[in-house]
Length: 400
Ligand code: NDP
Image (cartoon, rainbow, N blue to C red; front, side, top):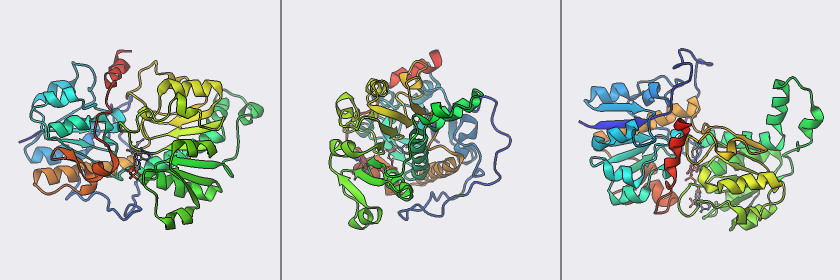
């Protein structure tokens, strides 16, 4: 029987919810490209419940227990005395998620002698050292598409919040003011602006589609071009370099995976390509950007605003400069973990576990690493190597 260690974020400060804002939690019937939603044989939770925090347990305990397995659920993941480190020695499966990243470094993978699989209950497996997983023949999978549309909604919200200067205006109301001139002296219309996405995958393409009705000019950069019919439908301009895209865009949004090829793609040098006063929205991964270069660009006015929900490391230490830099619209990593998305990635995790224990193949679209090499979606989207370097800094959050 297997031991499964599942690392989830903490419960709400006032305790696990006993009621919710809504009675139901509508779900799409199918994803936009025709991929089906997760298809486990059964689920033991009500969609709309908080599943992503420790007491929610991704709705997995009944299933795993009834099959004789041991489930350890914890939020303790950083520092040498963490529960994750303590439990790793005989764990067969680790379930991690990007929001409260259980960094599966080479050291941890080497220590986990019985480890067979790392399931990412979400999308974006950069918090696992994929190179080490390949070398130790550990399977890595994620629940592709589970929250792509949820993130795209957050991107559009963030773009509007920055361009319209929404957050400072809202703050004036909380402070008892009516300071219209203070609010609007940084407020513009999105209409007629040029908006570009770095990557037009599931999230990037959805963002382009959602933005079309705003009357903006749409641009994209990707390693592969979209079909001509899609380019025509959305009147897209394709760019083969960041420089070419950034030079013409008023708003740039990053929607590519983090891997060694994309790490720090936004840095002091590439920020010079941007139009002065451009807005940058990054819900993909914090490490796509050089932390201090973003702060400098906001302070100098090279960027008019920066928003997103991804940091490095996660949780962000109290003194992370993105908490206090000017003109930002940052949140903790929430865009892909709405209650609606949780229902999908909890069901997807259950599907992956059922396949594993019943010796059935895991869907190709969920596979990142298998049999010592990048596989399935991973072979398409990631490059070999490791992007977890520096993750030990996450321990500073709890110590502060
Ligand atoms: P997809 O795999 O559908 O899309 C990724 C796209 O990135 C692909 O089109 C890929 O191109 C492109 N790409 C890869 N490398 C580069 C590069 N060097 N330059 C330009 N484009 C590149 O994934 P999703 O859209 O679903 O998710 C994207 C990322 O968003 C995830 O990897 C994750 O990091 C992040 N994410 C964040 C979430 C959150 O909660 N904030 C939740 C979900 C995801 P091609 O296929 O043409 O090679």
